[in-house]
Amino acid sequence: MDALDYEIVELDMGQGGKKMDILIEFITGRIKTKRISQDGIGVESYDDGAIIPLPDQSIDLVLTTDSYTVSPLFFRGGNIGDLAAAGTINDLLMMGARPIAMTLALVIREGLKFSELDKVITTIVDITEKYNIGIVAGDTKVMPIGSMDEAGLIINTTGLGEVPSGLRITDSSLQPNDVIISTGTLGDHGFAMLVTREGIELETDLQSDVASLLPLIQPILKFRVHAMKDPTRGGLTGVLTEWARKSNVSIWIDEASIPISEDVKIVSDIFGIDPLNVSCEGKAIIAVHPEDAEQVIKLLKSHQLGLNASVIGQVKSTRKGQVLLKTAIGGHRILDKPVGEPIPRVC
Image (cartoon, rainbow, N blue to C red; front, side):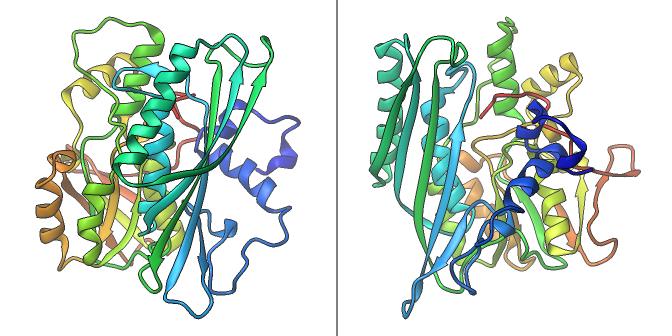
């Protein structure tokens, strides 16, 4: 199906699954200039950002942008400010870039408490200052009551980074025999948002995993990392299905090796939602050369953010474009990209 099969834009079209692909293809199909350099990467690649080579220099610029519409603004383990700052940093990192600067645009609903706005801005500033990232431009709008929902705040950011030419990381660079690594447990953010939103009292310590991955990822960039992605909308399944298609390979995953916390398993069972399709905001999925995998795992596990890092699968040249999951009982099933994020408004 394509956009012409629909009369209106539907909510699922913003949730990171197959329906969102329809909306994105509708928009990008109408953009004529999709990149500004033949050697660069633009919107046509559907990566985390654009790559702009600088003439006569050995550095490429990486540019990424994102909007955050999370509801509620404050949740177990963080707030919308954490998502905006960490999400921007992580998108740059996933392309191999060193984050340099970001912009900050706010759409505020009339009536939002200054105390809440202060907490959000302070969170963003604390994170960007910690990693020496400048907030160099921005914009602010205030909307009347009734024009926005009860969350009361939308944030847009644009991130700027740099990567040495030849060391860029993209979704289409996986190689057969690459090892697939998860830096930690999956599904924590989406399920923490669900529990917060529904006001459910559970005997669980489940928290969002939202975090900047800069100190975790930068040390491993000296190895042969072929692809990286933070599994936000669409979760692990979304990442792997995109990789398999873009790189024209198959990816074989072992269900027993996928790190999932007991808290996530409990909430997953209650709501009947597959954690492999649920958003993370402080994890990365990495494809690395098999000879470097052991050293990468060792480095990841040496950091607090990577204590649960695990090898979860391998890339193969057969059955191109497919993702296959070896189940706990020994069989295999094909993982298909979800229609949409099963828990909306989580980022």
